[in-house]
Image (cartoon, rainbow, N blue to C red; front, side, top):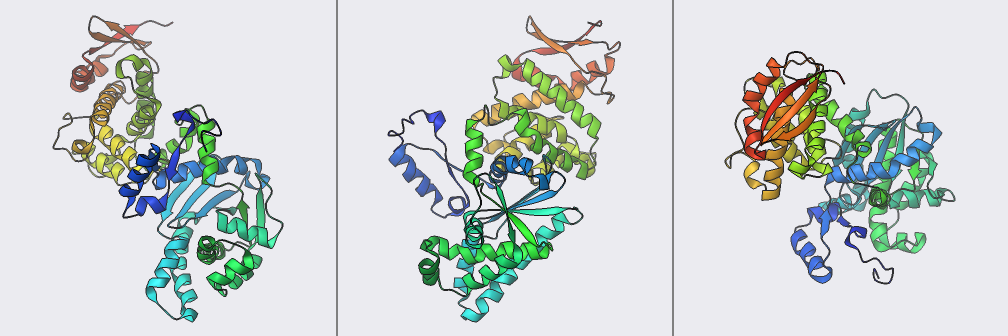
Length: 446
């Protein structure tokens, strides 16, 4: 089929799998079988990746809908195995989380109970209510809250209640009308749904639990209606594929906002953290030839720089180790578990000892990842040394290579003795990795 459409380049093809494959016991055998048959590498996306791609898909609709100019949007996507929640205001992601509550998971749980039919709805409502209460706690305090529902089940419901949403629009649906449809669906057998609503057997299995989840959450939030979106996960994937790059400064903005919120949670020195992150980014860009890393690694470095001192919240002694623990055990919008491991390691190595095979997580990395971690950590140490005064007085610099040395020329700073002292402590890792000693040079105004 791809040949028929003349899609032959590997960069035009992306194959992804979501929760069902990610949690399947035969996941590896399944993915290997696809690879053997087709040559395609399937990406089992984790919760963070699903949230990020969902955000890419829904954001244009939120921007174009006048109701969301001042509203906080709770974006709800009830899948087969999990429910994804995004809380968005303007361009900022205020909260994202994946809950182990899905329409197919609920159906399987009910079958395991083997309870009488008249009790099944009560059991299902009890399970949904627990998750709804957790979600409500996360949005308490947000004024003007609106709920946006994604997914085939809720789009089908909208088409039954009205004429259906036009492409690329948000359709408003009454909760009272949706409740009546839920009652009808839950009172009908699976075979009856297939016959009366002309849906597939698979869709009939998930329809009732999915719609009940939407209604229960809307009622818990005291909403009279919700918006149903025509967007799904594939829209976000397509937007990403036609974009110039997966990791751009624009696409990273909601990720950075989530990172800053985590830093504030642990009372970090925000001015210092932001400045070190900017210095690290400048160093990364000026040393592109030396490190040869991509834009994703620049994001890893930037986030590690923002969070490199959050471990002080636990204790100033050994805070780099506490930083590693906090990062790797946190949830950050758009960052996968693997990303958090890399960020945690880079932040851990911003001071003290170099990476060792005995260190947690580091020994499990492949060679490419280990090399990236030490390169990024070396640059983070230099960036951190450049703000040793915590005054943010070094705003710009330029790098030149000179006989095996890296000369960092800094304008408009009369005394660099504090930074030079910091580099004696933090510079050896950079010299070890890149083979260049870092030296600072004062220059006059341009």
